[in-house]
Image 1 (cartoon, rainbow, N blue to C red):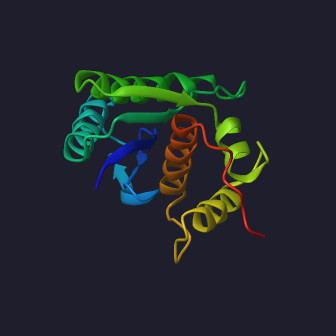
Image 2 (spheres, rainbow, N blue to C red):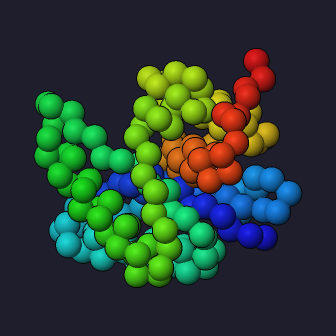
Image 3 (spheres, rainbow, N blue to C red):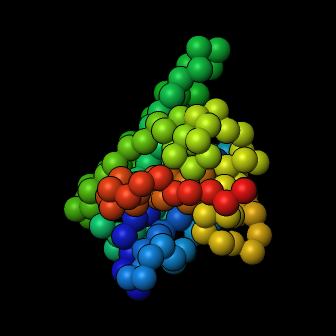
Length: 167
């Protein structure tokens, strides 16, 4: 199958990924999480992130990598700084393999899938389940987020109208 897009939900402890493609529409080729030791020094976690992301990208050879943009909550600016390290390593891994990278805000992704830029995790999981006709909710939420990011990117690439949700 043709791997079109790899969506990545960056994290220092858990990173969700989803590879979508297929000639006959959207198929989930692979999806899961990479887990990193939270007690390991930051530099060691970044090496592990780069290794895992490079392995996924090398295996599936997507045309585009889609990543959620960083956002900073005013009460927790340190979180955004730390996440920037992880996201930077992911962007570097894609760039080293010559893969185009696109970024989307969380609000943009949520609005695309649910019509609500402030949708909660449960709403996003249900929207992904319906959109991709999955038998079960995608778990953990990091996988659902990666699937959502990849779908948002595919929509932009195809210039398709937003996915209609059945109610």
